[in-house]
Amino acid sequence: MINFERDKDITSFTTFGIPVKAAIFAEYANERELLAISRSPEWLENDVLHIGGGSNLLFLHDFDGLILHSGIRGIKRYEKDDDTVFVIAGAAEPWCEFVDWCVAQGLAGLENLAGIPGEVGASAVQNVGAYGVEAGELIHSVECFDTHTRRTVTLSREECRFGYRDSMFKREGCNRYYVLRVSFKLHPSDVASNTTYGPLHRLEETLGHIPSPAEVLAEVKRIRDSKLPDPALIGSAGSFFKNPVIGKFHFNELSSILAEEGLEIPHYPQPDGNVKLAAGWMIEQAGLKGHSIGGAQVYPKQCLVITNRGDASASDVARLADFVADSVQSRFGIRLEREVNYIDTSFTFRMLGSGTSKGVPEIGCKCQVCTSSDARDKRMRCSALITTAGMNILIDPSPDFRQQALEAGIRSLDAILITHSHFDHIGGLEDLRPLIGEHDVPVFVREDVADDLRRRLYYLFRDDRPLYPGAAPLDLHVISDAPFTIGPLTVEPINVLHGKKPIFGYRIGEFAYITDAKRIEEEEREKLHDLRLLVVNALRDRDHFAHFTVAEALELIAEVKPEHAVLTHFNHDIGLHKDISLRLPENVEPGYDGLQITL
Ligand code: EPU
Image (cartoon, rainbow, N blue to C red; front, side, top):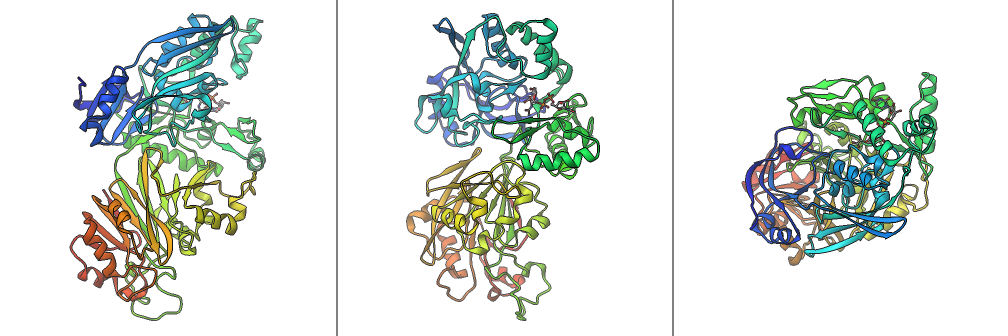
């Protein structure tokens, strides 16, 4: 019998120590209980979030859904041969105690990862790393519950696709796989495995011999104690940002600018030729050591960490993090990427542009709409921004995107959805550069759109690397009409016809965005039921071969019955904005540039 706890205080399941509650909470002791949970109404009817030790999470609000936590404990060792020992640990084992246990067993490999808060399960999700070692290097396989098939699967290290603070569990496997147990491949040894990190190398010199795993363990704990807040006393989530990795060309340019100021940035050349930079140093150089907003503070001994001074709210932490990222960007031209996951179930839609391909006013036109002084009659080309789960997702970078981004104050993008490759929906791709930062941003496209983009913007989307140094690192993901994920979100493509051309609309939860539709087959219209917000194109009243008229858009709305609908993609024939709403049903409003709706 599963114990679903209601209105549960889950503060102690996070290391920030900021008060937070979950509508429902359940902990399972084994796979059987997890299977039962996955068939329960609590799981089927709610947003579900699986957490570990909460050492990398910031809840922006109370969680209005089901929080799951593993209670699977236990550590077992299996000798393969004299040189290899497999250690399998339950996901809920505290990481720190697990590493101590391995070292006490005379096993080498994990000692550099001593003292890290969190649980064993998260070590695989997050690929925890410190002092020259990453957990992924030692993970042999990960046993998971696959929520799609409700079966237990074992994924090899290769299948986990570990990267710097990254794995497929954070990307396409997010919300699909729950880690049950992790198997590590270690070896019995009196000497530590890796002393390449400066202070550990110095320890070797001081001792006059290669230190034992126990000596490294003790030294790592000493270094951590001197730099990082004690999780038992001060709330934090460890490093708040990732260390940025930049191209060699960019690095040379940055170092020569800094050299003129007599500065040298701590940096670590990577095997692929790129260079990793110390974000903590950049934050300190931006003058933010000890800087605080409300109860949140940049930790003075290690600026990469944001702490809760006791009374911080999640919004204090988020505001401070934005301030840090903005300040570093102004000082060094590099946008820091968060390591901490924001848990945010709120959903905001912002209409960046509501106009058809020529925009309104049309160049040279003197009609009453094109000469109107009402700001809502000025319609840039169609584009939208979704903000949820701590991410900014852009739908269609229109040719007016630069202006739209400036007006909306957009500072970063996490993913881009493209409906089709007509110029008015992709013309802004080359202007995304300042918002992309150093990390590859996924651009989700149909196959025909990918082909078109590779042809039209060859310098951005060619396969052979490196790209021209100034090119934005956009990463094309070709999608079919099957649902796909962006972090914790599931996105469902909707097939619509733009004249005769098949293009995509998108549904995310209770929101859907359809533009440039002329026809939607019945099967696809089925995907548009139970929406809280539908945004749909309505060019004008007169018929058009490729776009819905207002009447056609209203027909769709009447059929699928969203709670609320917004019309978009207007041309100047639509009339003055102030007049449009007068002839629309109560739950339908005409969109305008800058319209923002929070669900
Ligand atoms: N530095 C400063 N000022 C600061 C912080 C750092 O000048 O406020 C300089 C240091 O002097 C050093 C360089 O930046 O020259 C790097 O600092 P450090 O060795 O402390 O490591 P880090 O790059 O800031 C990363 C991990 C830590 C991990 C350490 C040690 C990330 C995001 N963080 O920090 O991981 O413990 O290396 O390997 O990669 C965590 O993930 O929560 C975490 C603490």
